[in-house]
Length: 76
Image 1 (cartoon, rainbow, N blue to C red):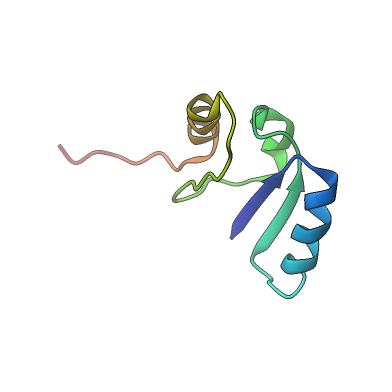
Image 2: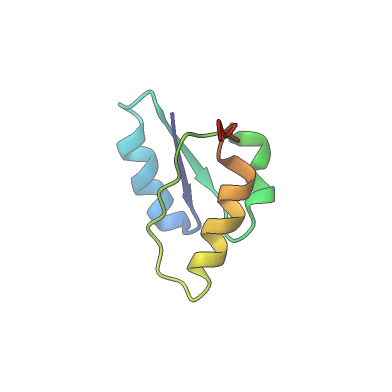
């Protein structure tokens, strides 16, 4: 499953259009800086990919990783 978060309503229209034929893409209109606002729409994920150009992009990635990345058990 791919959860695609987009803040721009204009870009969201394009995202919805390309996600329609793909059963594994969930477009979400939200601000990635506030992952709590879409927490109820996203399950835990194996990896996180971020393609944004914002001053706080590292912090945004960390916030999303903390909420959505699967917690793994270390064998060491």
